[in-house]
Length: 320
Image 1 (tube, rainbow, N blue to C red):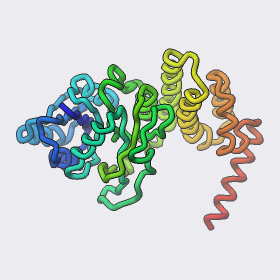
Image 2: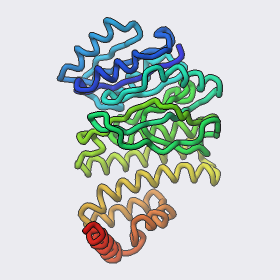
Image 3: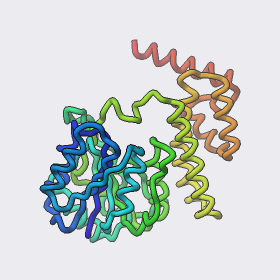
Image 4: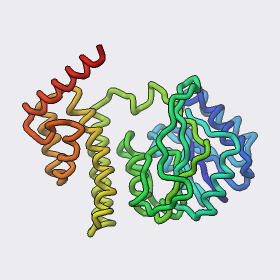
């Protein structure tokens, strides 16, 4: 089997029909790909929609489980996936008709471990917002630690590469960044495909838009710990290039902690806790880099506080 598409579903009946239709409306023979739908404890009409599609489409596999979160749902799909390649689709998104066969052809022709595809961001009403920046160039193949990354789940992975890799079930945000960073570090051949493929619906009620900053901040701390452990076990004598690769991911997680914990209240205790966290995890070099985006982050709290207040005042004046 060529491909496994894994779709976690939780109370997604508003968009699920469109998502599943798009996965079925493909020129890839149904015997060559499977659609694994994980109903993660939905209480709306999602279960009925999945059942109806399964009765009509022979390559749909349904898993029903109690609500455990998106990571556990994707992991349930990974446990049974049979495809040579694996990708993920969110239940409120959809893909372009007849887009899978050309992607499979490209994957096989280039013998790729990871392939990034074109993603269009749209509104709930399917109005165009923007395209995500290209992740590499078509026909250009690089090893994982040299290739640009993108954490959206709409990425094609060779099954042999991810092997027993699973999404971290202890976190509900940043799990895709962590999964992707580890998978790409294992990869020897990574590329980009420029044809239209994935439509990502920017919904205001998504977890990334949640105001539960403490929960999101804690998740970033766990993600950093997990990635540091992986790096220590698999790259004990990391080269400069490998170190740079992982540092870029750590910077993403640290930036989110700053945005969700330190900046909203400009609280001294949170600032000092962040600085203590940086020292504990030996991120002093990254603190200097982050101070470019967040002036005075590497200085005293008083200096940081004043810098941020001045910055906010300037932004307020510019908006008038």
